[in-house]
Amino acid sequence: MGRVVAALVAVGAFAAVGAVSAGAQERGVSGYFSLIMMVHTSSSSYGDLPGVNPWSGSRRNGGSFVYRSIPCTGNAPVNNISSDLPSYGTRVAGSRAPSSLRAHPFRFTVRKEDREWMIRGTMTLTVCKLDQGPTPSDDPVPDESKPKIRVAFEAKLGTRTPESTPWTGTFRLRGGTGRYEDLTGAGTIAGYLFCFAPAGCAQLGGNYLDGQLVMNGTYRDPTPELATP
Image 1 (cartoon, rainbow, N blue to C red):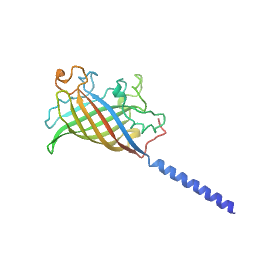
Image 2: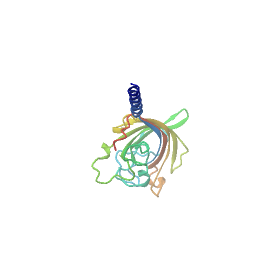
Image 3: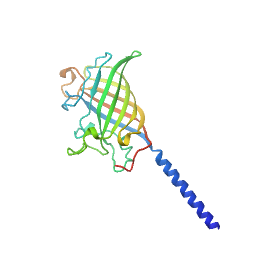
Image 4: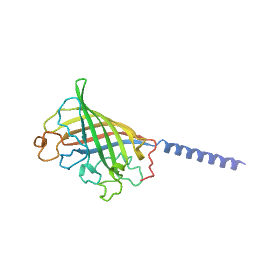
């Protein structure tokens, strides 16, 4: 009888451990991440990009300015070195860091608030693949159909020159599509707008044609689908 009771206790303990593990899985994943990204416009050295509108640096209220990263199949060093966020720090099966990621698009407006010039905007991140480098040119999935991560941000503008203007602020992760539907997070964002072409902004009409940004923060996803590549 004693052995039977001991066996039942052992089974109960195993079941309890299993329940805790299952609960832990249901709670999802969380952690820290960083991101490096470049964005461009139609007149930049990366050629025609759809729906863009570069900013001249004018500090007047109003206007919507739009930048984009190159397509997923494009090959450019900083565009391909993006983030460990899409793979949740390589927790997703078969993933590596950094994963190839693009801003499609990076959009903002300029406003003066409490004597400070601010930009407020959104960014839709296209997850090209959970691996490094550009997407193969024969990839059957167009960028529009790839998973997305949505970001909202606000930032204070720094000292402007004819060749660049910096900004720094905060962001929030606002879900996305597919694996990232329940993704949330927050952190700091900073960057600058400039002209990548050797001629510089002053010789190319005065607009800031390109931009580079970095993000550092935390994320949480209660439904991360880690077993699905």
